[in-house]
Amino acid sequence: RYPGHCDLMRAMLEVGLAESVLSGLRMVEARQHRQDFGPAEGMLAGAAARREVAQRFGAAWTFSATELEQYAACPYQYFLDRVLGLEPLDELELTVDYRARGRLVHRGLADFHQRINEHHQGPTSPATLSPEEYQRFLDETGERLSRQIGRTPLDAALEQVDLRLWARWADAYRQQHQAYDRQWQDCTVPLRPTWFEVSFGHSGRHMSPPSTDEPWEISTQDPVIRLAGRIDRIDTGTVAGRTVFNVVDYKTGASGRYRREMIASGTALQLPLYALA
Image (cartoon, rainbow, N blue to C red):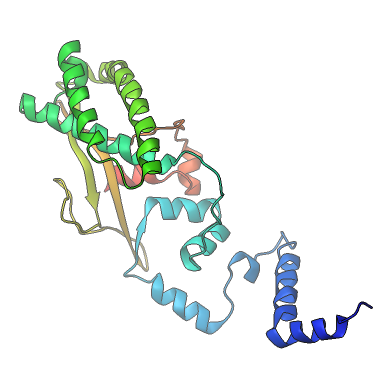
């Protein structure tokens, strides 16, 4: 025994700290039963909790493809993130904001393609431009992106780094698009970039055509599943007198290949759902 030991224990009991620690230990112990799914994995047994979840995620709820993929990959992570609304603690370190970098690249590519199409009065591949014209549009987009910089000095500095990276990537984008265009050279009208940042199920003031605030609905035997999303780019062309299209999703990191078993398991739903929508 140490001096004040009883007083400390009494104080812990009074504020409920001991019970909180015990509850945490019970949760850790419950998580060890990996052959079963129980409350520790988000299985809600209480009637009140089940009613609340049913009300929040009922027929009126609109899902995104990312939500469905997250649930298929790890229901417990979905429970913590989407149901309980928990967020991981921020690391106290200077690091790249990859989401901000991705948003900058997406904005840049949308602006780049839209201005090319406006100038040529129709869907146009950047690979068909002369090197001088391509560079001019590239420089103009970089200038427009640089005007949007600067919430704090740190943000501005990091975004300057991302702008330099954008310029380097965009320079190589021409070669990427040449390889992409070769896939459609036998079409009656080859696929060309037509629409950008097309959303469905979202409402907003700056929605580009053919966006709609109406969600896409999948009818099943019982509930109707409502889906929302934002498509980076839709290319259109013509084959044998029919309009054909391709859904393009930009990746600033490594891009993975879609395999049939990944779609069947629900962990790679984004592009198939966007194509159906």
